[in-house]
Image 1 (cartoon, rainbow, N blue to C red):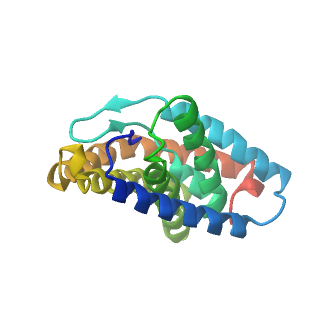
Image 2 (cartoon, rainbow, N blue to C red):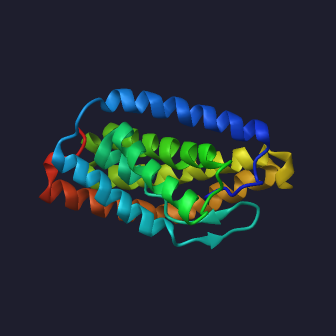
Length: 206
């Protein structure tokens, strides 16, 4: 899902950077001052785990690549703002050090994995946990987070003519494959959320 340099037209790159930078400023204001030490530790530990999981990539036709995202998990455990911060740490290091995702596409990658995925996981879990329970709500949050992130990536590259494929190819391919992987991501998300809530309920975002 990491979009490399050259896949997005300049207008798409600029638009996604604007959205990313705007949300960054808003998140930093919402986070505010010093963090509780336990939650600060969770941000760094979770970022390290997501970083390792995202390093496994499988190429797919008509899109970029398929891999675990972890945005839904970050949104559930940390909330929409600290979850975004954790994903920013992951994607920035991957972009600058490993060139996993292009610098010109960092705004799009952050929009997809750090905003769309995080918000989807957070709000689906919060909205369904009372009715469905923690496991089912976290599973659906994890599944929808990666599926919507794939859809967003498909739209971005499909609306960039320089890529060579249009949305009739990129959107179905990116959405379908990430929906399939979303079953595994959803299960992993649910298992981790249930375990964390059982042993460290105080670190979870209310």
